[in-house]
Image 1 (cartoon, rainbow over the protein chains, first blue to last red):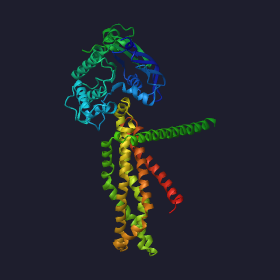
Image 2 (image 1 turned 135 degrees about the vertical axis):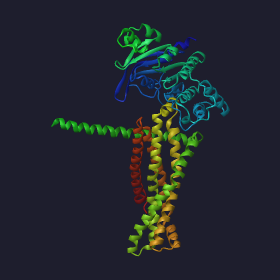
Image 3 (image 1 turned 135 degrees about the horizontal axis):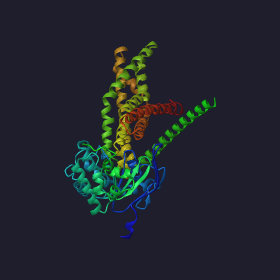
Image 4 (image 1 turned 90 degrees about the horizontal axis):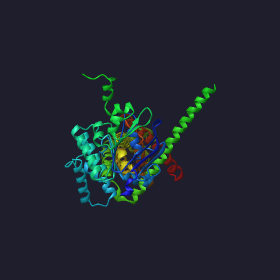
Length: 263
Length: 270
């Protein structure tokens, strides 16, 4: 459909700071419909800060962020909350509401924003929990779950309203390899079967090469984007040696003799 | 010389700016809270009743033992000191008046409020501060929820409901404490103490005590929640938020008490 070619997210001249500390300077990029877009970078480069600005939690020092054609920076009050309802966010630790069960966590947005009956809501909750392989955990409290399970429950909650845009903050952090691979499969299924656009903040390379269509790389030194494009291309052919080093976990430097090979 | 002066001006300017920002954030919080309260009054079915009942239990029935202990102690102390002074002028029988009026009008509401500040106020701040650390508040915001509705309203409704009840309970226990002293030290008969107590507590004093407890409840819950939202995102930050909740609450309780003293003592009279 022609109207679906407009970018889902547009970040324009974004400058951000964390308190008084400048973190990002003049960031520009677009996220296209139905792609998995990854934000990479070393520790402290501002990946999570960028995500929190895009999801409307922080206000940028300068610049604009357009989501589904509306500026989340300029919107306020009910309009802003309406924009936020159009996307789902998963947090590093799951961020489940501790006094509610897993089922209640997932059903809360449904109770607040839909007019579905209790039975219908229960059915949707079961469907979402099934998607993240958490069937049977509906009545568990978050404190009774492992870290990985909390993340998956958090994802089920983010998908409760079936949003067309999802944000993931370090989805694979703390997950075992099998669970991490299953999560990657789920992300790809969401993209392909549910027409979802997904933005991921991560530095797990295995995941990036599996799921990401396009990536941007942030640098702490320049506080800006140092690379943008297909991750495989950046790994093999990027003109910037630092980018290649990052994408190969230092292997490119080891091959060049700069880092001693481990015996 | 000019450098030193510039330094002092800078300090004063910085301090003024901080105070201004603190006041602005407090005003903003009160505004947000008022909107949330209005929404709750207009949509009572949307109130989180399960959480409200939990806080009623935690702040109400959970507080009965400590309130009983402290109010009983307060009754004993007031009774003892009152008896000491009244006995000099042969005013033994008025011990009941002294204890009852002082407790119902002033000490009961204030003591219960200070106990609740330490119990409920710091708990609210710590709870919300911890939610901040685990990004639960961010999760609410990005889902388009207004955190005040889910986190603050149940606490305020709960405390405003239970504090007056706790105050009445504390008043009774305190009066009993006063009687124990009156009976043991001044040999006041129960019937005399009982009658004087009933005569001395006018409806006005009783109403004053209850109105105070409602306002104190509001202050404790609002300040506790506000400090929780302002908490830094680490363990020490949560601790500081809980401490600050108690200190700020007590400050505003004192201010409120002073204002009440003017309203009830000077403007209304008696």
